[in-house]
Image (tube, rainbow, N blue to C red; front, side, top):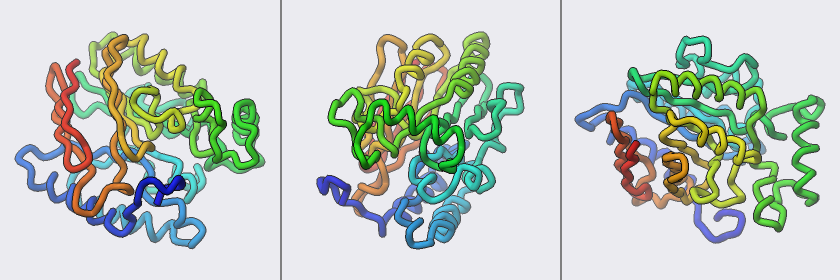
Length: 300
């Protein structure tokens, strides 16, 4: 069960759900151009059992059967298993698929963020939601100490994985993180360029940034800052996230942006599914959901 013992978790059937998704994609008339994996690819419990590499290899072996590119987003469970430096040199670093433009990736090499353009007029931007975080960085580093100081401004619990009682501050936990100024400046340059070219942009991250698309406790630490950036650029049409296992959706009329939080495989019963196929058109994206994931139409 989850920590509050309100929802059952299905570890043993998770690989089979991935196989079912792969089979559906391979048999579809219109084959996917790429696959998005939105984080928490293996569970943090693997670390204490010395099984992190084995678990990762097992899941990636299933993904390798796909003939198309897989873009990986990093979540908290990636950092429970591996350091940031280890992830940057692992097969979960898909930034080699980034667009080769000057703004393809941020200047700082330790930030895992990049943009790619699968078709003219459309951009997808992978964001690093744990750029500011206690996870994945050695305790001796300035980044760790700075993140700890920031977290303790809002969370005075002995266990920093325990959320503050006040809902507005409940996101300030160790299992969440935020976007650094360097990353936000890079995103600003990407979106400014997209505005000028009249491109359609979809942003991808593990952590949601809209309170109506996820529980407050699952939001990025500085979600307001990213929301403000999204709302100031007409090119952004969609923001996709994971983290919240029960999923969520909200259409932000102020910005015209669709905020989608995908359901987690981990709490999906073995007799159903938790994946989707998105068809992209000039004026909309159509999401065909399977099992726990509901159908959606995202008009631009």
